[in-house]
Image (cartoon, rainbow, N blue to C red):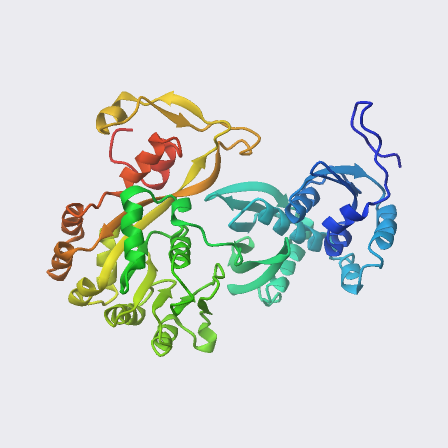
Length: 488
């Protein structure tokens, strides 16, 4: 088969003899799994021979694995396999051959979907059965679910079984919810995939959460903290003792903020311990413990064990129950600094939530040093954002608003969405003596907020609007994620 070449006389037709440099960029596993023959690397473009150049899932897997642009050329599958055995020095092993069995379409579909999800920086993959057969597939990217190609009806059962098998789940049991995990190879490291199945009226729904445990912890400034809020939060993190709470709903980036906090501390001179479920990121020189309920490793049991390990800093991944809350408060009063996350809508209401968990107000007032609350909004694509006059109603409601802000456009860089990535919006309640008195005397969350305002507390919407006026995000994002009581 003659290769397809680009138009123009300046480009010679590529050869189907693979170069050693190209072969070195593509692992044997990926090459044999997807039947791709790496030919050359030219100006950051990987030239590959593939059976179907229009198969975007295979191309996405290559982009994810190599971080190169990919130029596909057509070649018969049997010729590719023959050249692969020559290029890599051996034939694929038995496990690779078995992938071409009767279940090969499902195996290949699962591999390609996971590769595409990782390459697209998805946090979750949703596989949802449909009444007419097959399954809808959606990727959560930047907090928004985006639908992609569905799983055909003829492979859906094998597809879900393959996912469950990879995650160590019982493929014969389709009547009970199950949880499992597996690893996805990516760029020389392993992405952790947490798989959860749920029986529904139309079949099993499966959700896969993707966690890059070996990503580096970000700086708080990269997360979106700024100005006086960043200074006050950094002071609370560096304190020799205390109780720091980061509040927000599920998926608001709370744990990432705690990782960024721990990364600011000197782990060589301090004993830093964390208990998490799951461990989302590996931190150097930090003792990280994974919760394992079946083995008796629960949050309160591990937290109590930390107290016998001479800790300086303790991170409790989530405050879920009264016993864990009691251990955390006791540790902070004993001279440690304790970090934790909590489900609460804002910083003042986090006080009410801790009281509901059974922490006495006097102990809480003595231990608590700072409460941060946060959400994640999508960041505008700087390539296609467009200026637009701010409506007069908004300008009159917000003092100091500029005349223009930016709205989302849509270009190839941002896949037509107008946004790339996310950034945090925050509020921080610094607990001074006045706030301690309010907490200890049973003040409501509204009264605590009023007293905190005297110490510099500002509601989250103010930070969100500041990011809108700076061109970082849009007013629509603030309304969607944070809400605003002003005119709409």
